[in-house]
Image (cartoon, rainbow, N blue to C red):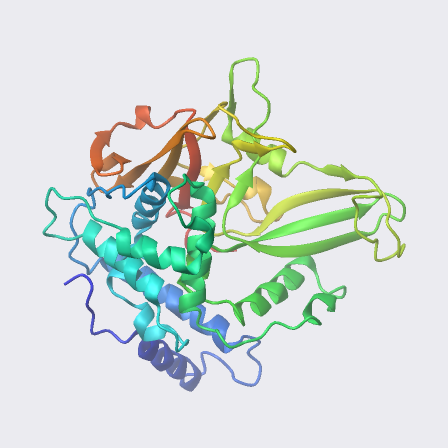
Length: 403
């Protein structure tokens, strides 16, 4: 059965740790690496090996999800996550039961895995999978999604990943302290400071969700008075990209959205933080860049909120299916960092009356998921003005080198 496994993943990691230390592959006295970081690295190796061997007997995955009352947003996001292969295999093997450290029951992860098991069942039939139990558990965890109103798919994705991570966090009992934010790394180079912040993050937040989706943003501030540079680093699970105004040719590209996202921004005194050197608010410039690259969803910021209303942008944004290069938006020396598209969450209609669908790539090509209906697609049919959340994964040429 896809949902069963006799492999003790946690035991495998511990055994591998002991082997590395005993063979002096790691020196206990000098190795500057936490148990959590080491555990995450070894988990990544095991997941990559599992992904390459593909030991699971799975169906085609071309199974729909039943709409149980304005749940197209849920169906579209779940289909996209279902085609995130490492996450899918992790759920079907129920690996979280072997590695999770929390004593709390992983109710949401259990029901999410049950949905994925139904979608990838080798005995797939004509019936769509009913996500009612999963959605019921999710609404208990996030009451904001209660009722039958249409919800935002990107918000649902963020809440879902956060709640799944909380249930299967490998470091659930490490408390955050208020003093951490006051620690400075002025003596470090940027890469050392970023690594120190990432290591601290893993010491309290460490799960398969972090392994797959989490990355690190760098925010650089340059004081216009004293020319002092300062950096802050934040963890992210998706990039929310602004859409430029429609060009003369009637469309914009994803690269233009990325350029606008990373464009230098001028901050006046009222909106700028304190300058560490001037010890006061000054005019400064701010620039965002990617310090650590994840496998990531990228949402196009189609919905804009003003004081009185919410509007939707219908600008056509063209995006590459292969070899999206995020290297220019990362550290100076990172080179090319290539991504391939494997899923799209679409939104059709207006703010008040809309419908979500998904396009997902499997071994036999692209399919269009419209709740319980599943039909084949050609690549030419993917590029539309309805694209909302784009799911990219590291291409094989760069996946082995993770920043």
